[in-house]
Amino acid sequence: MPNEAPTKYADVLGDWLVAMGYTHCFMVAGGGCMHLIDGFRSRFTCIPVVHEVSAGIAAEHFNECRSAGRAFALVTTGPGLTNVVSSIAACWAERRELLVIAGQVKSTDLLEQPLRQRGLQEVDGAALTGPIAVHATCLRRPIPKRQFDAIVQSSWGPHPGPVVIEVCLDVQAAPVDRAALEGDGSRGAEAVSVSTPPTEDSEVVARQIAEALRHAKRPILLLGGLLTRDVAWEGLETLERIGLPTATTTSAIDRIPTHSPIHAGRPSSWGGQRSANLLVAQADVVVAIGAQLDLQQTGFNWREYAPGARIFQVYPCPVELAKGHPTLAAGFCASPNGVFKALVHQLEWDDAGQWGEYVRRVRSLVPTLEPANEIGLKGPSTFRFLRELSLATRPDDVLALSSSGGGFTAGLQVYELARGQYATTSAAMASMGWGLASAVGAAFARPGQRVVLAEGDGSFSQNLQELAIVRRHGLPVKMFLVANGGYASIRATQRKFFQGAYVGCDEATGLGFPDWIALFQAFGIPAETLSPSDMVAERLAALLDRPGPAAWVVEVDPDQPNFPVVTSRILPDGSMESNPLSRQQPPLPAEIEVEVTRYLLT
Image (cartoon, rainbow, N blue to C red; front, side, top):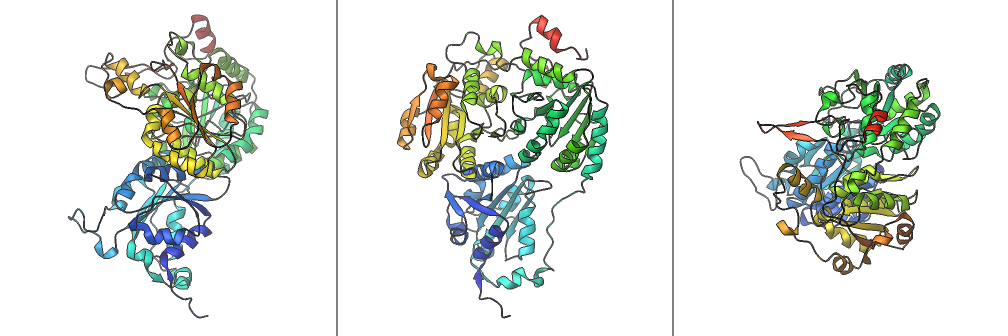
């Protein structure tokens, strides 16, 4: 068979991506990626965004919420690549799939050290992103399909994370022999170097964990973000039948519905629920599946995390398992999905000591809506509003939780999620400005479903330009702007540690914010200020039923307290010392404290 006529390499790359299941491309056009744009425009649903960081965020959350297909980000060279670095870093920290394809100057114009720049808008993107990517490379010549596929698929796992592929401008446009790139002649291509340490057999690991749980009196199963929703939901019926108390990390709050009889809450140091932290502290076995167990999860005083428990961790990274905190009874470098699937088939547990009933008792006695957060308020409570908002949503709604700020931490405490409801956030990097772009990605991933976003005004301000995309595509994103006048979390920190020496946290100390209603209307999005009488689930449900995009400004007390907190002290040498997660402030009433710390080591 004669060879096919030469084809532009950008077209071939597009076909290879289609074959791997990619359907959507979030992009910012530029001269450095012009041939890629030309090759991709007829092969994917291309969604132009205003800023490159939004392309990465939207692709991340499309993939987190997808029902079908995959999304990637397309950016140009130089500032196009540097602008998307924050979203690359977030996916690296969160261990999430992200493919970024970037333009690059012509291969003949590439700089050589010690030059700082040679080509127009040139930056060495592979070197810049290499430390925060599973794989980062610059294509100086066409590579064969086997090699390209391997690079792209390294983003998916078993150690998911961002992959960055720069394609030189002349390589994009190069005429290539498709048959030669896809045929047997490519077998001698340079191998892709991606670290993939061997993983342990899921059945064997599950057998060891099942044995530990079988003898446990007070077990807690902790599900993390690397355990996918579909796998968690498939196992929920078994967990509920057995009655095994199950908690979730920040990135996995939708794996267990709030009103499940086994839900043990959301333990963590930041936005964690007090009842969940107390239960983990009283467990005798903690099994963390797909949870990183970083300091955000365990608290800075990690030596007192689950002090009476044998801790078992299933995570596909030996470095994380060997980091030394918290102290593990056993760490298994294995697939969280694989181990969980095997575990639910092997699991046996007899709740002879009524631990499950005690878990429900603690959850009922320690409210997520802490009374201390409603004392002396000069405006509506952020916590109460967000709880009512979650109660107003439908099971098929997607909750975009933003990723930082008072609205984010309050939401983690009080959101009530229905069975099968999606919630998406990017908490590991915990960057401001994530909410709107994540809502955009989720809306494209789940067409026809509403996306409900609640985000503080300070965070929203950092990426508000993507309102243009919401309006342009008529996305059913319902936006609730929690207006607390700035950076409430930063203001609280400066009040706590520096006696209210405020700077750069609100309009009085240097920030500036627009007339929000006028801003939304300028983008063609209907908006109004939410009245206090509308901040109840029944009224909010009616507002959410309005068609298309819509926005509401929710004016709350700028000095909203944020309890419970893990108190820390600044020591004379400048270091900090923190209490364990089980000792949060303000203290509980004495009679409640006695009841909910029955098994706490003293």
